[in-house]
Length: 300
Image (cartoon, rainbow, N blue to C red; front, side, top):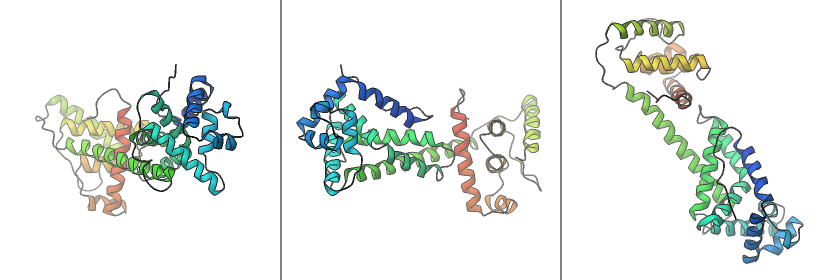
């Protein structure tokens, strides 16, 4: 029975996991038979066999992938486009055959996915390469199944790469905005006046924050010692201890959300511009929330 897994979406070497999964698909006789039937039905079997230097009866996922890799010559490009369009049409269908077709497309697009993921690591600081790679692979799979690519003019691989890049940028930008809003909302949380216990805890937290450089020098900027702000300071201190935040990252968050230092003043104190300071804070917020997602307790 044909059993096709969805792309492995766990972080930590996702492309290696996809390659390992692909080796299993290539060894599956049911998958080999399905691919051979596709190529015969789409009248592409002879051309693919020629490119892969394989008899038609031996065609399978490996030979199909060889035809999908870019090659020299106009005829080779035409074949690659034709095979990819045929796969995209199948992937837009239903059932295991459509899932398998999308999985083949993902494997063929891995070089493009690697380039896309690498290109987004720096603009979206705080997200690891494997994290962004997982978003990229998910986007590739979703777009392959959508049926939106194969009717377009032009090279289908280029169209798929462009749509995937847009998908990744949109997902990462939305995620970054959501994370920043989570911390901004903490400023508005209602809280009771601090009692003796909270006051003692606040003193300890502020002492640790001061030792870590999370309180600005000069005239004291101190927001009300609400539990939400104290918890944020504790989270920042924990993230710094764990290496998830640098001291500069911690200051960027703490000065803004707990000490309420205006951006122009903070920028002047650190020898930078207000815009650069805001960008640092945005990246730091993303790093902090990524670290918090690994914890069993909810964020803020």
